[in-house]
Length: 227
Image (cartoon, rainbow, N blue to C red):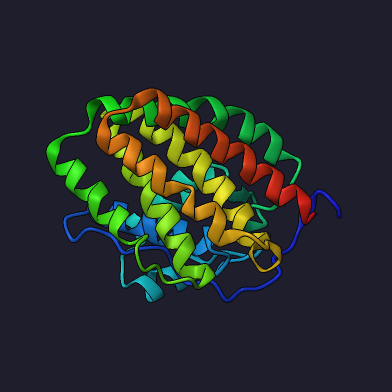
């Protein structure tokens, strides 16, 4: 397979919805981000701000700000006199991203176990309950994976760590969507979050760090097995 790869399927839905309190700029960012990450805007596809304004029901300024922010996060490429495009996926980046995530995801899980509030524990309990009778469709499992990771990032109470991890997670999540139709053990991979959530809820920081580190390694191994 070449370095730049195309999606196997454009069927994936957008990720979970945005809080009503989010600013218009944040709404635009999260909506466009999810369209790109879930391959509804495929790698290399042109991006029209006008079409996004119509689709999202938002004005030019928040959409333009979202595009510029996503360019900084390597999800959008802007070429003078050529236009704006969803960034290509270079699969050789997977090892580099995983190298960073292996350190930061473990640290985030450790911090989350130490710092989560009672309200956040309640949120984690609600996520944990979804593993009792999960929707086993690939799309639903991917949404659950996303909810778990982003909840853990919030529990760190470190906005710099949260922002950094969110950027790398978005990049690796797009790679996952790219190969989703070919991954044989998606449900098994997602179920690994159950003991992770339990460890964070219980405040077992070292166990949480080890579980999520193993999770990152197994994800990279899984994707490489179908390349």
